[in-house]
Amino acid sequence: MYQGNYLAERISRASEGPGDALFLTHHDTGQTVTYKAFFANAEQIAAALVRAGVRPGDRVAIQAPKTILMLELYVACVLSGAVFLPLNPAYTPQEVKYFLGDAKPALFVCDPEKQGALAKIAEACGVNTIWTLASNENGSLKDARDAETLGFSAVSREPGDLAAILYTSGTTGRSKGAMLTHRALASNSEVLKDYWHFDASDVLIHALPIFHTHGLFVATNITLMAGGSMIFMPRFDAEKILETMPRATALMGVPTFYTRLLECDGLQGAAHNMRLFVSGSAPLLAETHDRWRAETSHEILERYGMTETNMNTSNPYDGARRAGTVGFPLPGVELKITDPETGTPLGVNEIGILEVRGDNVFSGYWQMPEKTAEELRENGFFITGDLGKIDEDGYVHIVGRSKDLIITGGFNVYPKEVETLIDDLPGVVESAVIGVPHPDFGEAVVAIVVPEDGSLETAAISNALSDSLAKFKQPRKIIQVDALPRNTMGKVQKADLRKTYGTLFT
Image 1 (cartoon, rainbow, N blue to C red):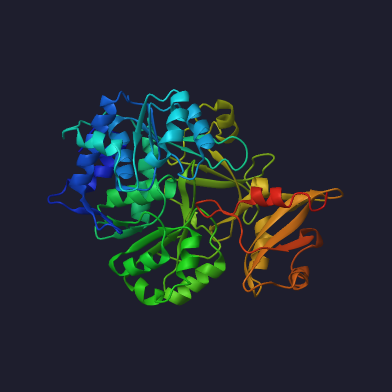
Image 2: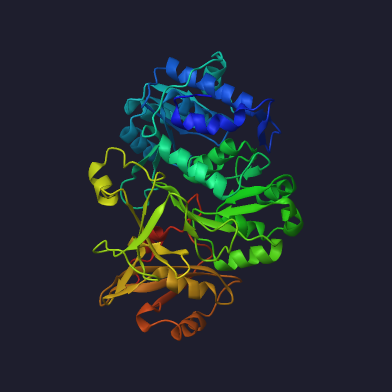
């Protein structure tokens, strides 16, 4: 099926068997979609894209609610040779203007409720065609699909051809478009399907967004390649997930999923039928890992990936899933820890920059050759910007981002080390440690703490740290807040914290 199109061949193999195997059930509406119907719809959308003038290599951008039709559009782009460009629905029109102006898509799909503002922006950016897609799946995208007939022949695509562009979150500086090839998407999902033991009997609870690599490529492509099915949820809802677990086998989520599920009654009984819980996109607290195991008798499998690389490492399916680690490099992925200044490899338990190489790694940043050259070495290793170490048993630990490194009085402080100690203290939900400008030390260590009930004695936190940390690592200020700022994938926004508390000492 779809011979000659590298990615399409691989995501459609499991659907070639006899009968109408179920691919997807929409949780809220009860709508079911078979593999046969899903690919037929994708073929019709692919034909509509071609009729609209979209050529192989053209970008197709979409900012719309999470729907089945959006998944069909993704596969349609693969079939037609277009480059899929999903955008976070939370982006403002001004932010969308940057992405459309940078990527210059041939076609843009938007929510009809936002069409008034976005259509003008799209036209100003030179976008020729604008379609709409609403949360109920109505809109001109559906109309264009339904106007086409079956029988689209997939466009030939090589492993190195672009399949998608995903923009980095852009919390600091200009957002960068990571170019992901057919090879990068196919190889990563094929590896993960086998590594995580997915097959046709699996039923995945799909509650992740589909503008991000975790929900769009990992969850969707693995299910397609395994021939399994998914229960499709428009958004995360802890109670609905709990109700769904008895008829599912796997859940892919972010740490927030698990902390909120732990607050629900009946978790232990609901999780009985499940075989796999995966967490990523943000660090999972060891406390959450331990509580989940105690409550459900399951161990969460934490993995590590990036927009530019898909998934790099994973705790083992069979073997010890160690809290606070992201496991081992996946098959086909090379990983090393290097000195931030010299790039030379470091030894066991030495903290440095993580670099990765493999078919999963992106091909560069869209129209940013200089930035690409800075972060993607000629030998194929990508400099992730994440600080980490490899312990004596080979487990990879992420200790923070290189930009989060605090240099106070000439000494390096790794925030994760301090956060781990604070998070282990009684009465602490979580913490974030940042560096802010200081007139004497260059930077000062500041801890932002979320207490369990009301408030904590900051002096008690300081006293508890005094025996475990060198003086220069200890926070000079401890601030209590109700919650830490996070993006849509649950990552703590330390840039926002540095901005908020940047003048504490100046």
